[in-house]
Image (cartoon, rainbow, N blue to C red; front, top):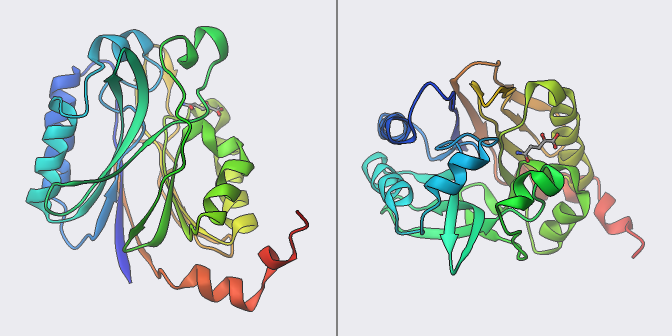
Length: 257
Ligand SMILES: NC(=O)CCC(=O)C(=O)O
């Protein structure tokens, strides 16, 4: 069994990005009995604070990823550090980073579906265009970010690339939290995959994030769900469960392409 921690961080705008970075790294460093941890989307600036995302955008060797690499090394765990505002070659991306227990970067994923139409995320970020599936202690693990959850075809492509688990980082508001809950279960059921989805908490630029980070097993059963405030949600994951369920109930074999 793999023990995961979903760090449902508060990104209220009463805290500076630098203070939050210190606090987030400290939380990760103090985790015990955990194999893999995941943080929310754009927690260092707040997922809806696009001005701050512009101001704080930085390269992958900048302070946010560097600090979280050190935190993963100190904790001795695999860390999906959530996403950060990445500056690269004149563009900005909403980039998730997975780090190993030695602090090395294992994988990155640039959010493909940017939220908020022309004056939202697409006005400050460039969409990613590639899939990320990597081996972890959760089995073959596909990455996705927040609004991506509404696009089942992305998750099907991750399955076609071998994914048995989806790791998702989010900044999803309370106003649409029922969508989050239904869609997380839908992706698990239709793809017969684990969904490990970490949302943020707190209020920034007038948007209240909804929490309710969740772990759904490949049959669609919710095995752990957080409340609305900042908390660490723990769950145990059997990485063989997706393979076993797909063998026992081979829905994916009945696709008509
Ligand atoms: N940060 C996001 O991608 C928000 C997505 C969202 O609010 C929605 O899909 O609804």
